[in-house]
Image 1 (cartoon, rainbow, N blue to C red):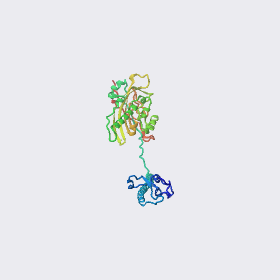
Image 2 (image 1 turned 30 degrees about the vertical axis):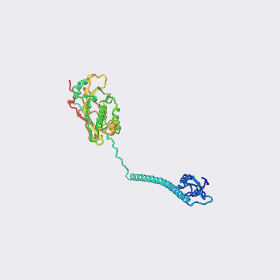
Image 3 (image 1 turned 60 degrees about the horizontal axis):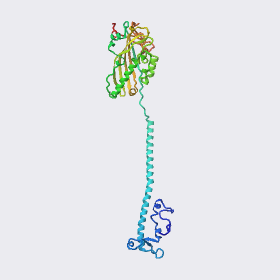
Image 4 (image 1 turned 90 degrees about the vertical axis):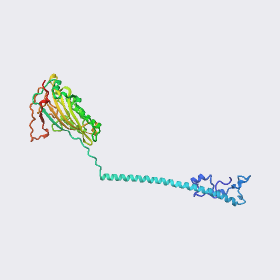
Length: 403
């Protein structure tokens, strides 16, 4: 096609500065401006003209230079060009609407995000305001109760029987007792309202471990060890325990015998490490979060004087009855520890004048008590009433019968 490259009548419509837009730049190689087409010297034949046999594809436009325009051909061309231009304008408008709609969506998204941020900020401000007016009060942390202890010395009516450990056990009420930890039997574990069967069994097992370490361990009985017992206690009771074993006192809270059984190693030794035991364990719910285990066991110890020259026939039996009450919450079950709430101990044969708050002071074979009644208590004295020593008479039937 001949003709100039630029349209004769200037820049096309739709671009005020003469620079084509993106869409018009895209369609410019295909769709021509009206003035550009009118200035062309060649024209495509119409359908009627192409039915001729030897008609060329194109021909010079009549009157393009000298004859003037052909009205019929111009009308047909104007109709085809008008269709093409309307299609081009429709495409440009549709793309323009798409461009206008795109920023709208972005602006809507920004407004939605801003609204969400403002809503979150408002909720947070309301929460801070309500928290400042009505501060949350956490439930009080229940502290462990201090141990309450009762110690009773049992005084014999006459001299303490002596003999070999096996003979003493055979002629005493402890003849049918089992030896060592086997004597602390666990009852069947049954679930409670708020604790499973496994948790109940765990509570019983921990209580048994405490009894074994505090009543049967030779290192604890005569060696002065405390660590095996201390490891099983609730941390809130450790200070009270340390004071009880370091500075014992008959005040109902700081007696060594409330926590463990201890003999003075300078005066007493074990004649038989196999301590005889019998007793019971019971478990109940103290609350929705706490199990209570109550133990009641009698321990029979075969003791002898600490002097190495003592013969095997110089042994005697010393009986201790311990009634303990434990509390175990869910943390205690998980950490394998107990809270010892109360401890009631009866031990004999002992002299009523002895102080059972520290190491126990048994009367060994052949000894007799200086007195069988506790010392007088003065209600007008300045000493606290809890410091009064308790004493009772040991029943003759609890002693081994002489062979």
